[in-house]
Image 1: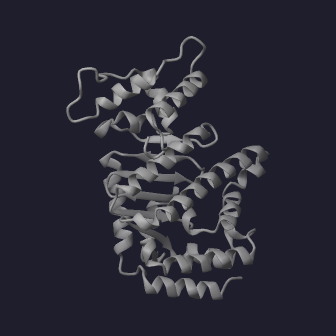
Image 2: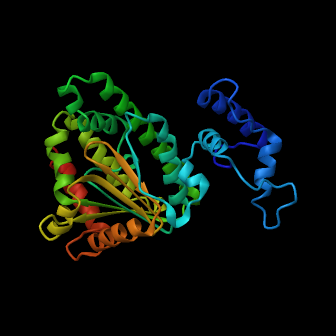
Image 3: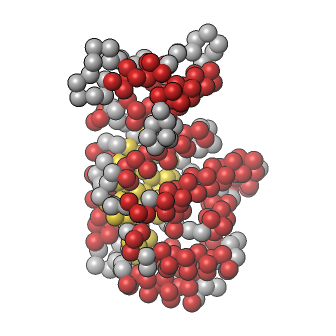
Length: 306
């Protein structure tokens, strides 16, 4: 409610709209302002006698839809939280839940570790990001699904723009440390315009790398780029071969995306601890370059853009 600037009355109105969209006429659960007040009352250290004691599955569905969060997160399943797999084409509405989870955990974490085959959206220029998303899902054109491609590119653009806006809007109150890890060859592909970057103009690629250099030079952003050597970290790279990105917030939340575009996440320690250990090893390898070395590496790339 705080994230969406909702009071009890506004949330009740959103719940009414969600219930009408989710349930047939006459079967919608009614979540009034009074009902919301009783639910919130139960969250207090000493709930009153009129506090809600239970929430029905139908109410949980409506509340999660109105609040743009997942039912798994809202119900607080603790260590029973299973891996969640999301198909963007089949369920685009869940994008809002993804954004919420990432924001929630990043804001409350001390360190966010991200590995990706590409720059995260917050470090890309909007124009470059759009072209990159088009390239990532180019296979949909090959199978005669241009409309599906348009929708998935639009969806990931929307997520990326929302993430970028929040990244810069939260700059004055940022306390956590964000580290992106990339293999040297993946950064070189941007400069050389190879693989998925072959259709992106030299101007856009150069501007994106120059923007990256400026962002890394701003200490208030609290972001670090670690560049790993492909050969020295080859075993870890093989372990990541099915994914194009992986991020971990402390040891509480992990999310990864498959090359197909499917997204998975988990709040279970069985997943978070293992993936965090892998990224920490990648971060700490002696062949990795960060700080001034990373800035010099990016500067060299800018001068060699083809």
